[in-house]
Amino acid sequence: MQATEGSKNKHKQRPLNKPKSKSRVGIKDTLKSAPYLLPSMISILIFTVFPILYTIYISFTNYTMYTPSEEVTFVGLANFVEVLTGPFSKVFFPVFAWTLIFAILGTLGNFFVGLFTAIILNNKNIKERGIYKAILVLPWALPATIAILSWQGLLNGSYGAINNALLNLHIIAEPIQWLTNPMWARVAILMVTIWLGFPYMMNVCSGALAAIPKSYYEAAEVDGASKFTQFTKITIPSIAQTAYPLVISSFAFNFNNFGAAFLITQGGPARVATQFAGYTDILASVNYKLSTQFGRYEIASAISIMIFILIASISYYQMKKSGQFEEVE
Image 1: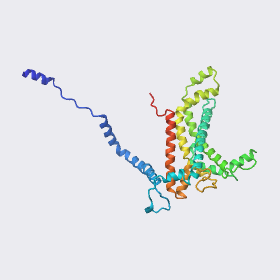
Image 2: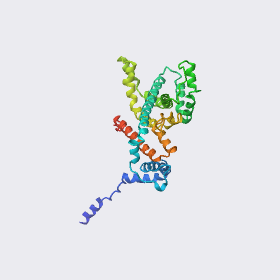
Image 3: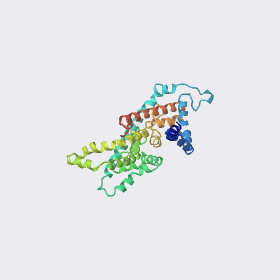
Image 4: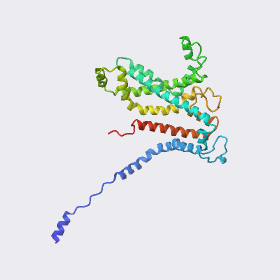
């Protein structure tokens, strides 16, 4: 019996130490990195999270520049109702329509002008394409505020360089009132927006074009496909997957492109029906005027939340439809 028990004891093995779970290791690594992430997290809280929460709070109150702090009260959805169905709706909907048109035309203009220049610069027969590309990137490299303010002088109706050039070339008989005529002011804003934004799309499309195998075009030429067919069947589908998310982000940027809409015309020419918005004002510049000039913080906050919900919904829908959220196998 003793021998048998001794043999059993010999065969007994000490229990192995259980490996630490991945969750515990992950928590420890996170705690170790916390001190290094703390400064950036504090900055995000102060400059991003807290302003958003405060904006949401103001949108549900009656807080304005002229409201004493002790009289600020919770009003629920009254500010949103006033924007959509109240007196302010006469300002909101015309400005919203122009903002949507401005964002769509500006984004499409940026993309197609950038794609066109990228295709030209992708031609290996152009030996100086590096120099041309460096020149075309300048609008993107310049500080946007300085570039926009310089356009304000170029578009001046009396002594602007653009009008002088068009008059000297006998293209126009009289100066175009770029900054005071509602239609031409909107054309000017779109022109400046495309000039500032197309270099970015040019770089995006240049990278996408370089990744397209040359064998695709060689096979298409063998099959007798025209250049236009190659462009629609090979070039556009090939760059769509890369450019589509960036086009959506460009649309969101142009929807809130305060600089081009405000720095050139200050939102003018003025509308006769309202003092809150001019013909070139977009929702972002209207918000700025409501806050700084008229002190209507509650309406401006409500519009800000509506802009966020609208842009987030459009972006999510477009990304979902284009399959950007699908995992690559």
